[in-house]
Length: 123
Image 1 (cartoon, rainbow, N blue to C red):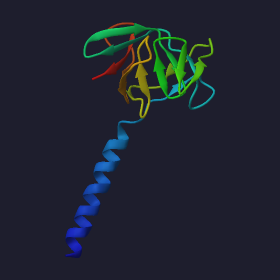
Image 2 (tube, one colour; image 1 turned 30 degrees about the horizontal axis):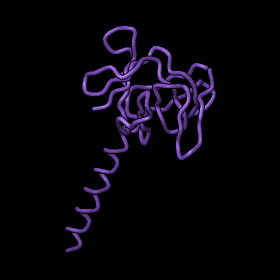
Image 3 (cartoon, one colour; image 1 turned 180 degrees about the vertical axis):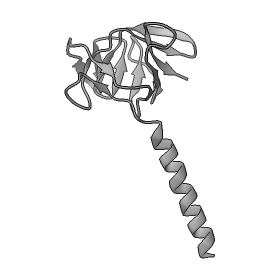
Image 4 (cartoon, rainbow, N blue to C red; image 1 turned 180 degrees about the horizontal axis):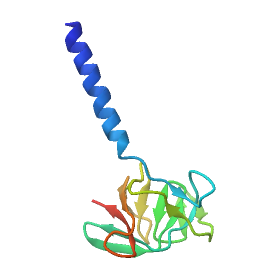
């Protein structure tokens, strides 16, 4: 019986670590682990369709517009340029379109994939 518990615990821990390995990308301006601003040169796509170019990072959102209304408050991104530090997943971030509708959560990122543009991908 204890061997089964150990095996189940080890397997659960291994799966949790494997899931965390994908959540490794952050939005930065080079001075800290997270920053808000404009993601110049990025294309947001969902299921192969382009949603917008040069989105904004606003809190936990990747937004196609500079301002975003959430829970009755309007939040705006600063005008500074930011970037995503590596290929991977923007864990717990939510992509929203021009109308503020949620497109996906935890998008993947491909930096300069197939040319000079970088992609934020909702699958």
